[in-house]
Length: 500
Image: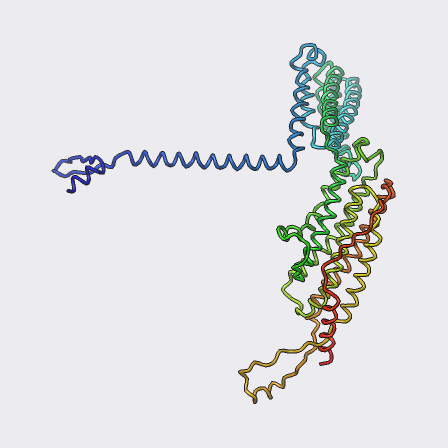
C-alpha cells in the first residue's frame, strides 16, 4: 500500500551508498516551481507599480489639462528650433552655434507667459550687455601687450563678477533681475576668457547672441499664441480661492466647536475645509512669484498695462493676518481645557451668527474680486457682521455667574450629608469662563481683520475701476439659529439660575 501511494504521488529516486544504505533525492520540480512563482511575483509587483504610476500620471493631467498643453508647447518649440540644424540654408546662416537656440528653449520656456518673458528678456539683456562689455575688456586687454593681457582679463573678471554677484543681494535686483545677473556673470566670464584663445571673438559673440534671440523669440511666440497661461490670471484666481478657503475654515471651526448639526457646511470634507486657513498662511511665496511674473506680461484680457499687481500682495497679506487668528481659534477649540456646556449653549447662537456673517463678507469679497465688479450687498453684510459683534459682546457680558451643583449621590448617609454642608450653587471660576471668552474674543478679532481685507479690496477696485454693481438684492438666507421662543426659554432658565 505504501508503494502504491508513493507511486500515485510521483516517482521516487534513491541512491545506493557504499555499505548498503540508500538516500532519497528531492526532485528538481519543486525548486523550479518556487523559482517560477518568485519570478511571477516580481512581474506582478512591477506591473502593479507601473499601473499606480500611470494612475498618478493620469490624475496630474486631469487635474490641470494645461500641464499637458505646456508639454506639447515645449515639444513644438524644440522641434522648430532644431530645423536650424536639419535645414542646410538655416544651418549655414548660424553655423554650429545653432545648439544655443535649443539650449535657450530648454532653459527659458516656463509654465506661464510671465515666467517665460521674465527669463527670456533677462537672458537676452544680460547676454547683450555682458557680450558688449566682454568685447570691450578684450579690446583693452589686447592693447596691453602679451604679458599684461591675461592679468587685465583676470582682474576684470574678478571685479565684474564680484560686483554682479553682490548686486544679487539687493532686493530690487533679486526680485526682478536675479536670473539676468546670473546669466551676465556666466556670459561675461565665457566671452572674456575665450577671447584670449579665439581670434574672431566678435563673430562668435554675434552668432551666439543671434541664436539665443532665435530661441527666445520662438518661446515667446509659442507661449503667447498657443493656449497661453497667464501668471496674472493665476494670481487673480489664487487670491479669490484663498478668500473662499478662509471663509470655509472659519465656518468649519466654529461649527465644529458648537456642534452645529444643522450647519450648511458639507459633511463630506469638514476637516479639509476647516484646515483651509493653512493654505492662506503658506501662500506668500506663491503670490510673490506670480506677482513678479505678472509684471512682465503684456496687456491681456481684463488686465491692462501697468496693472496694480502689488495690490494683490497687500490683499494676501491682510488675509494671512486674518488666517493667523483662525489658526489661534482652531488651537483654542482643540484645547484640553473645555468650557461648561451650558455656557457654550448660551453663546452658540450669537457666535454662529457672527461666524456666518463674517464668512459671508469674505465670500462676497471673493465673488466681487473674481468678477471685477463692485458688490451691491457688501455694505449690508458688513453692517450685519458689526451687529453680530455687538450681540456677541452683550451675550458675553450677560453670562450667568453661578451654576447649580448636582445633588449628592444617594449612597451618602444623612450624617455624612451634614458634614459636607452641601451648597446648592457655586460661583464660576475664571478657568471656566476663559476658554469660551478666548474663542469669542478671537471671533471678534477675526471680524475686525476682515474689515482690513475689505479696505484692500476697495483700494484695488478704485485702482482698476471695477464695473458698477448690478442691481441685486442682498442675500436673504440667514444662519441657522434658535427661534425666538427657544431663546426666550433659555433666558428664563438663566434668570432662574441667577436667582438661586
